[in-house]
Length: 207
Image 1 (tube, rainbow, N blue to C red):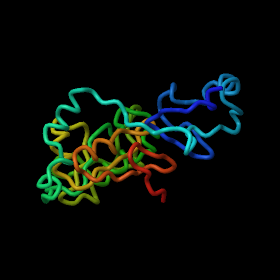
Image 2: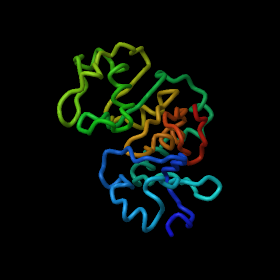
Image 3: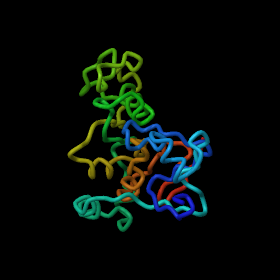
Image 4: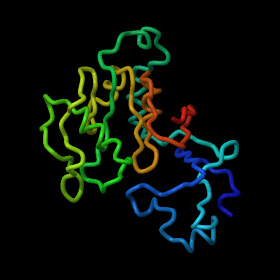
C-alpha cells in the first residue's frame, strides 16, 4: 500500500535492484523482511524506492540559520559574485567516516580524503581511522593533493568556502547528502558522485 502513493523524498534512489547500503540499522529497509513483504513487496526482489514520473524529489530540510547565512550574499542575484574568479577549485566539508562503520558513503568520502588531504595540515599515516580502528587499505597519504583542492571535516567557514570554490563535491552519506543544494545556493557547481539517484533541481548524468 505504501508504494502506490506518490512519495516526496530528498533521496530519489531509482535503482531497479535497490539495496540498503547505509550504516544505520533504521535505514536498512530489508532489516525486517516480514514488514517489507506485508507493506511493500517481495524482499527477495525489492521494489524500486523511487519511481520516475510519479514520485517527486524535493530539497532537503535546512535550519533557518543556514538560510540566513546563505542569503547574506546571494550568489544568484549578484553578477559580480557569479563571474568573479574563485581562489579554490574543488571543495568538500563534512563527515569523513572516521567514527563510522566501513561502507559509510560507499567509502567515497574516506577514499577522497586519504588521497586529496592537504599534506601541510594532515598527519600522514598508513591507514584511515574508522569506528573500530584504522583501515590499512586506505592509506592516508595525500598523494593526489593539489593547491585549490580542499577536502576536510565540518568547517566553521562552510558558507565562505562554498562561495570561494568553483566545484563542490556531492558525495552520498547515509543515503543522499544535501551538498547539491548547498553548492547551488552559493554559486558553486555541484559535482554529483552517486549513481542511480536523482536530486532536487537537477537530474545528473549517470556514468
